Image (cartoon, rainbow, N blue to C red):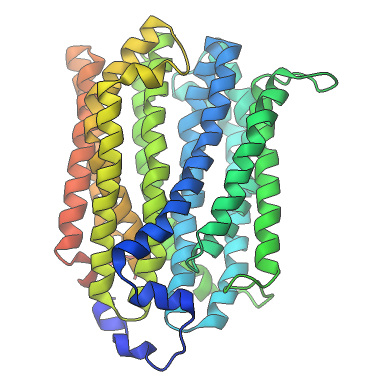
Length: 469
């Protein structure tokens, strides 16, 4: 269905009394509003990504096998986090934002229960799969010996409590869908402060607390997810959130409204993480553990870009969704392109800095010369393309708000093809990891430019049977 044909004109909200928050989303100047909403969200996403970096910093002290084991698990963990926060979280926020923008408060309340049911079921399902198939997955990614055993120990702890991640992410998405970025940011930043002492305490032990090794980092994460879920649930149940929890009859149309954005968006998470996981497997094929660690450490900076982009892109979901729900299509498009430009600028600055000074990042985790060499090569070649990744990913998130995901997903598949097929072919023909890294960089450039061109041309407002609407 075409958005242009299905949405009511902007005057449809004229008879509805707007709350101050809704008025801000629909009427205030775009750049100040976006920046006001983005800064706490950037903080929350950076804080959440820092949980993995904190663990990696301490696990590196356990030796090369432990660090390589985490490098094998990391793409899978990040894929699940992206699906919970960016994909399904975006579907939840988008549905609530569009309902509130159209003045359907009862429907927004009903989405809260439906969101929790979806996320709990997904969390339990992923736990079952990873606990049953973890060894096969990490062996397929090139794991063997001590690094494989370390990966399994960490993976079994984290995925054993995976439902807690999905619960916390769903609750945060409910709050963000109302335009409130402050509360989730405060909760997750407090959680990171909690992890700073608790993670090393559980990894190395102290006094009566036993040393759990690499498993200790996973236990600390689960404690963080538990506490975060409890606080966010209290905020919603207290009635402070505009979208309130209410018991109601479960209805398929409400599940469908979340899933048609969230489930389709999950493809984007799979695309990104499959590309990195496949590249990790190619590097592992060199049988050089320092190369695995070097690439795995370098690519963590790419993962750290995602919180920056999500910090800008998550407000785009509620801003674009609310404005399209109110029939303000052109304002929604201007918001998306403005957010894309901001994301490009921030991520390109980070990428260029990494390309110029790669050792500054890599030396935080190891001083092994082989690791530094491979990681530096990756950052020098791929770093300058980071801005295009930020551009494409932010516009994908804006497309969640619009409920129009065909073009971001299509060009995401193009990126995967260039990176995977091109990277494999380049490595096979030349034997050089540098040419594989060049294919990864080319995929990012094509992805960002193509998605921006499609959305700017008005792709949201043309009919497509593949889109979420």
